[in-house]
Length: 503
Image: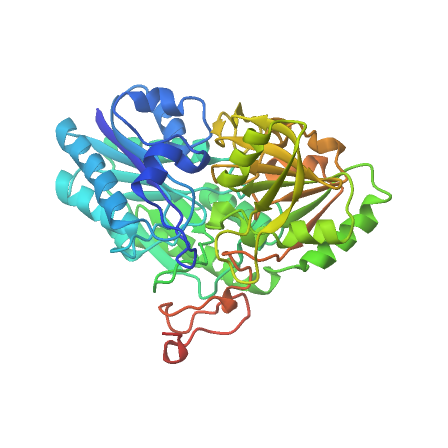
């Protein structure tokens, strides 16, 4: 069978200041492989924990015809130029590969372009128009997808991750392959049931390592294995995309409409019943550092502070300085923070050289409210080209390229400074700069939950901190204008009113 494959990954925070330009996909990749087309795709993703790699491994018996695969670090809107160029490359690749027996796309599910609210729905619409109504189209999605009616309408099957941290990305690609194989073997297109959830969930409480998501996904596995369904999915959503279909969703496929409806309804009821359980304690920067200092005095393992609102994996700039200021203000020792993304500071450190002191206005350059650079003298402890391999469960098999990087020290606080924006979610992201994370008293990580995959095992305690950033954990504080009327902006929280929206 001839299978066209491609991918277009972006998680869009419409409140973030920066945009995803062509260069972000073509030259950087945001920790993912950079834009790649044709047969080079196979080498670029081999062994990596990403969906397209899992799909390729599972479909070796077929003729796989690669088009284009691209990803960029989460940010504000995808520019019209980047969206049209990359979508065009995928469509041109499919056109050249026709006739096709099937299509697989590795998508995120929360892409918003400057000219399309529903980036994936529009791409799937174009692919469907190209290949016709009978060629099966299957796509894998991120757990944080905002699943739309257009996405459901134009694909035969959509399937999303079941873990956050996303340690099952390649496995999800394999599950997509199974769904496509089912269609290739002659099974008819399944019936589908989509159920939206009427409340938004903060990213830091969506983690499947904690409750209630842990139990909800166990239930999902249970239902799928015992009910007559083709597949069942639950996307917890990305609560920073200001358009009407931003919401968590449950969807099910079945050989009959009754089967799909029954599975979707059961899962939806469980998610509705869990609303009150999505939440937890979020500390201010000062509270987090003071608590960490107290705990560290008697601990033999690191105290981790998650700087969740400046998570570059959710559109944050990864350069805000609130938590760093608190570390300095309270005299933290044997502490390390990463990543502060500041290309100019990294270049200044390289010019100064290891062992020297350099005056830098570090971080705080992205215009986030209540944030500013920290101008001070920093000791350059190590410089690096920022290239290394990662080994944790989330970034497994990735060849990281942070660009010119450095380890700076102020007092007894060490700072990993990088040129390229990537979420801090792997211990090697400290080690490449000369810091052994297991020997630190306090580790500050700019991440919402992915860090748990590689840091929970070494942590004494994990504290969640609300330092300045683009990804507010209280979504009700975001300046929404276009949400669906009546959706609760946080679990058991206030509902969005179209009549009182900020214009």
